Every structure is written in C-alpha cells, then in structure tokens.
Amino acid sequence: MNLPPRMRAIEIKEPGGPEVLRLTEVDTPQPREGEVVIKVAAAGVNRPDCLQRAGHYAVPPDASPLPGLEIAGEVVALGAGVTRWQVGNNVVALTHGGGYAEFCRVAAGHCLPWPVGLSAAEAATLPETAFTVHYNLFTRAGLARGDTCLIHGGSSGIGTTAIQLARARGAMVITTVGNAAKQAYCMELGADHAINYQTEDWVAVVKEITAGRGVDVVLDMVCGPYVEKNLGLLCADGRYAMIAFLKGPRAEVNFGPLLLKRLTITGSTLRPQSVAQKAAIASAVEADVWPLLASGKLRSQVFRTFPLADARAAHVLMESSAHMGKLVLLT
Image 1 (tube, rainbow, N blue to C red):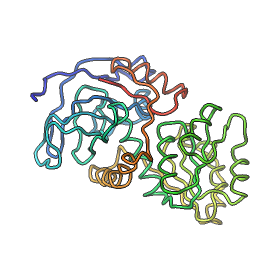
Image 2 (image 1 turned 60 degrees about the vertical axis):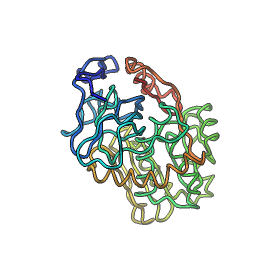
Image 3 (image 1 turned 30 degrees about the vertical axis):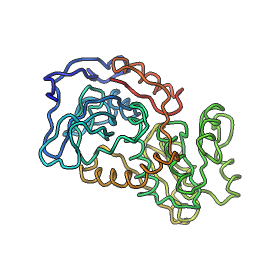
Image 4 (image 1 turned 90 degrees about the vertical axis):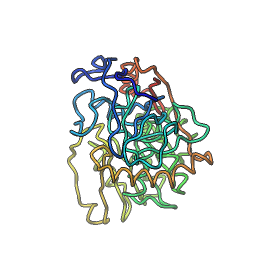
C-alpha cells in the first residue's frame, strides 16, 4: 500500500499525568534499511509507557518519542535488505517506541509471526512481556525444571506471562498479589501458591512453603524494601532478577547472604539493548514460547481494550493496579 503522509498517534505533549496524552497527527514513518512499517491493529500498554509519560523513563536518542513498545498488525512497507517478511504478513513486534499510532516502524528482526487463532488484542500483549520474561527468567536467571520461583506482581502483564512460562518449564511457582481476586486469578493461571501481601507476611509464608529452604529464582518488579527480603529468601546459588523499581531503586541491604549463599543478582531492561541483542531475544522467544501458544500452555491475558483515542483512560487504569492481565489500545 502507499503510506499516507500523515497518521493519527498519541503524543506526550509534556511530562505529567495521563491528561498529557494527546491524540494528534504526525508524519507517517518510512522504513529504513533492515526495517518494516506495520499498520497497527493493536498496541499493548505497559508500565514503561506510564513512566515515559511521567518523565521518569529516558527515551533513547534513536527511538520514537511516541509511547508504545509492542504491537500487532500488518506489514505494509519494507526497507532495503528485509528478506523474511513480505507486504501483507501479519506480525507482532517489539517496537523502539511509536506503538500508539496507526503505523509504526520496527526492526525486521524484532517481528514474530502473529500466532494463529489470536485476536489483535491478544497478539499485541505478547512481545514486551514474552521478551522480558523469557530473557530474565531463563537467559539471565537460568530457571530450570525443578526450581522454585518467586514472582512478584503475579496478576500484572509480566506476572501472568511469568507464571505460565515458569510452569511450562517445570518450576514450582510462588507469587505475591494484592487481593483475594488476584490470588484466585493467579492460581487459575497455574501458580502453585499465591500470597496476598496485604493480609499475610509473604516472607514467612514463602519460608513455610519451602520448609525453610527458600527459592531458586526471584523475579522482582517491586524492589525498594523487597530487596533485602528477597535476598534472604534465596537458597544457595539462588538468582535474583530485577526488572523494574515500582517501590524505588534504592534499598539498604545486608549483603552477607550474597557471599554466604553464592547468590547472583541480575537486572535488565529491553529498550537500550542493541538491535542485534533484541533480535537474538526474539529468536529465542520464537523457538521456546511460540510453541507454547500453539499448544495452549500459554494464553494471552487481555483485561480490557480501549480505542487509541482513549489512551488516557488506559493509563489511569494501569496506574490504579486494578487490572489483572494486559491493557490494549485498538486503532
């Protein structure tokens, strides 16, 4: 198709609350070498989008200033050197920003086939969460069959994906959540134990569940006051993967257990990584995760969809933490 010169998109007019998101018109992106342009059908909403909007998440200089890190849609233009994809292919993609728009330019290696049988909204929830969870749980933290894994924020988009992937890998899954409804939701997804941190001492409960042994892997998006507690719960040779700082990036920690138990602390974020690094993650996700979608062992978790123009409402709901699963914008 001939790309229109202008498109609808959501821009961040200035740092602030959800009210600063504005539907506007901007130039339609053109593909560069090794890139495709995708006509966006749906875009996932993620915490980093909210942080970017608030001015707390630095946009790399080579990234789109528009929010939106994952999409599902149709390839409509090819840059030089693209061989795997053709115009008309339906794909999902990890974006370098720009997903909250009618068209988005993406590195060809960051696209994966749109899984058969999934709606646009379901497909759009996959890239950011699947890439993040697979890379942190398996590549960096080495979660293996028979391990015990503690996943904080189990009802979030990351959490719901992590529960399912950890179970599929053969690990025992313990998760923390904020209310009884989220407990039940996570148990339905396959968690072995879901702890309500509002009513229970989650550290004591984890110790009881593991008979004092502790856990092999922690996946933590909370950090802050959780850091020392998580270190204390790791067993010998345990691995601690940090992926976000909802309670802040600073903590006062006794690092004694790090030495005594030979612990590993690791952290990562996707966006600053190179095109080649993210393409390698995409290949691993396609090999390990896409078959789980086909077999039904992994299910996309869509809580609510919004029209693109209602991005503000999606951010309000995201920051309320009242959702279970993913929020999606439909173009």
